[in-house]
Image (tube, rainbow, N blue to C red; front, side):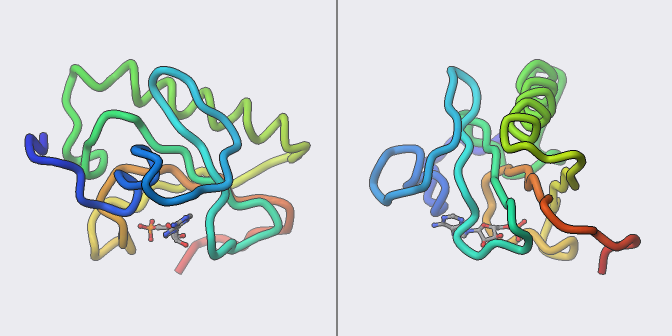
Length: 116
Ligand code: AMP
């Protein structure tokens, strides 16, 4: 678990230091629109707790991780999506570029499988 300050861009968003297009917020998570959308709907859901990715999580994070997934589904329904891709890139080799855990909600178009 990181003990230092959250120097990522998502840490700055959570602190209100840089703007974001907020979609949803509660005690555990914050959701906002991706600045470079990969589909008509592309929303990021992040925990307010600073963890790097799922590999940085432990037993104590089960509630937050479950909440992240349930909240993403609610947001997708609120957005009117009939389905969506829920993606978490864990580590640079998997495409993670911002090192604060975030789940992508991607939808609004047909999505191919497998991903790249
Ligand atoms: P990942 O590659 O899984 O780490 O995803 C990082 C995502 O964050 C990318 O889809 C970026 O477009 C998005 N992103 C980066 N900076 C911002 C920002 N300031 N506001 C919204 N989305 C951002």
